[in-house]
Image (tube, rainbow, N blue to C red; front, side, top):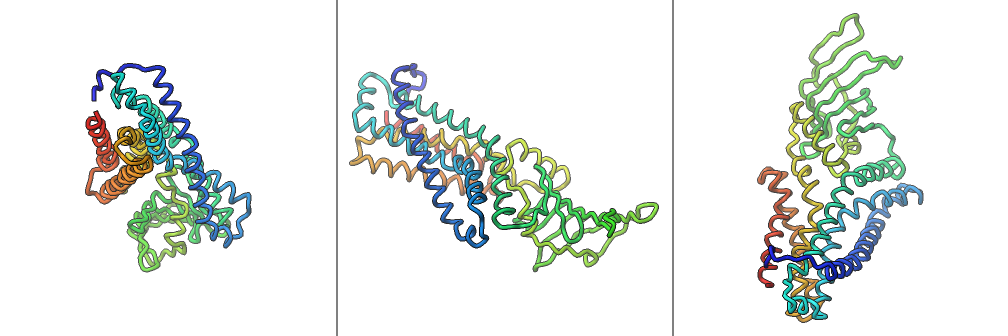
Length: 365
């Protein structure tokens, strides 16, 4: 593979990019529609059980489409690349390029660059459209479909919640540890006046009840605030962990910069936010799955002449694509469990498959 010998091929480049996009766009639309149809049937029982209106259901799925597009784009790219180069090879166009002294890499370069452009577009899409739409479909699901009362008010990094013991301010809800951190309870009297503030560094959900760590109350009824340490039994929190999880924003709902600032804030306050470092790096790594899979799919599709059918080569490529997501899932899991550094865990699948794609190009030439 002669990377340094690449020469601009304006006519053939436009032809290849046009061929690729003519396959990619309908494949992407078809995959999104299929995903949407499966999701509709998957949630049909919930919609019927809660008597959800057609309008609420339609808006829920409409706001969910941007997230679907993000998730479906890499499979759509590799499918389009496989079909594009498979058809070129079946029609002997790849052989014609090679007979003209153009390597398979030079032939594939315009498509790979187009896939890189798609990856950059997905990155921008994830940072602007997806967080807002994800927040909206979660609100529709909780308020209009499940008919839950709006008790939590969310900012990008904090939670305010109107609970049975007063107004709660929560820094972080950790589902894995079944705990909440940085809990502040503002207690009001019958006249809706603030009479005390309770601060709890950590509250753990165990055996269907809360176990509080170092609760402190600041009594504001007198002329001067009185600070005293409370016993855990002195504070009753009627809400469950699920109530707080329902208003906790997931990393997928946050942009890269907001998630980064959130992790910094939690770390400064002494709260372990290491589990979200993998999600932070994935914000940058995942969009480039499209370019990586295009790099792997092009040499596989270009070798269709050595296989009995186009279906075989597409099947082989899809197996490779599935392998990418297996490696991606394992590496991410290892990263969240502390086996791999977060940066390595997020980018491991991309690096491995870039090397695989490079090896396939070298072997093809």
